[in-house]
Length: 476
Image (cartoon, rainbow, N blue to C red):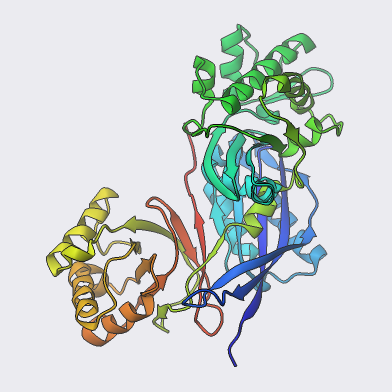
């Protein structure tokens, strides 16, 4: 009996500069009867548990407390009544200033290990902007109301910005504006200063260090400057020298018109009326942003999710599903993690062994990689027609291009945009010496520079959950 619907449990873990939390989501996958390949699509995303929100624990200003975070994660699983072994997909997102800490990589490795058999560890400002827009509800609203919405997720260390148009995210950006870039206790004593706050202070002629007393008027001046820079960027492009210094990514690519603006993240809770003092500049920053909203050309709307937007996005929107006609060697073990995607520009009209080998070599060289040293995913758009002679030629070209990988028993991962993976896999096995360690997937849209995790196959090995991610730990 054919399976037409499956459910998988996903987790989204957000380790932010200020707070950390997790969200469990149930994802419902259904076959698309209108698709030629009858591939699975995610039809429903239902949140089943929203955990506690804790202050992100630090051992010192440069080091995150991994043990406390791991203990928190285990407690949340227990509270939710969920076994980590039941988790099939999701993402650990280390965001903002936290991604710059000395042990950021160890954090994602530790949390991924304890969070389930397939959780992607990810950090990267554009990726954060994307999942925050989806998790806040802004992207879905842009589809339902046929609008172009600029959403801005303001956390402890960064503000992650995305433009959603008719249900698609068309541009993302990020800037170092956040609540805990300057930490001040109720007595006015500074307990934390991050580099972006130092840049702002230098710009307005202030000079404070940790342990100093700072008057309220100077806190206001700093928060005001952060708010002004953020408004400058979301009305764009960033033109002032300070804005350029604080940008984490490139500018947004603006469309002709923004219909609505929305804010999410911890600071957004304060923008929309919640009060709170968290020994940082969050409340003052929120007030300053509210005072500058008149500079926005369109109305500000309140999103469905605010402080939990990134966690919800990581758990419910980071997943892609491969087509239903993949090919897998049964000896492969999953998950396969942290695989770089190399685009291979094979033209069907030029199909030959020499052409394919040449293009694969060019792809390795673009990344300064040597064939056979590590696992990569070779990504082809539409390289070969589905005729046996052409498929055989392509198969032999793949074998000729990857001699060291084959000799070293490194997994050969081929990904296609078109529905051809099963045919390619079968012909490679039949017509070449590449008999094992082969995985061929299709109907995935990737970009060069993406990193992917490939999870345990679903539906009797027909489809694969693939999480596209960024592993860029920004240290600039």
